Amino acid sequence: MTFTVPDMTCGHCKAAIEAAVQEAGGRATVDLAQKSVTVDGLDKDRAVQAIRNAGYEVAAA
Image (cartoon, rainbow, N blue to C red; front, side, top):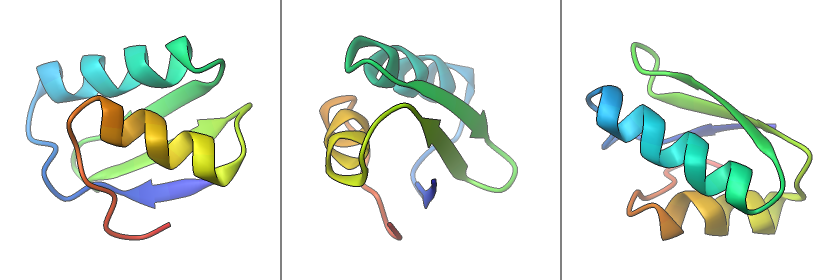
């Protein structure tokens, strides 16, 4: 599933989100240009929570 994360701006943002999703048991593919995160291996609620735990808001889920 793919989420919009409007406050991602740099490589640090990408790394932080990827690490948080991986820690939750999933895999994230981040597209900074599109400000989107595609998550595999987690249900929607866990994916959103992992992104929020990294310090980012999810605008669309």
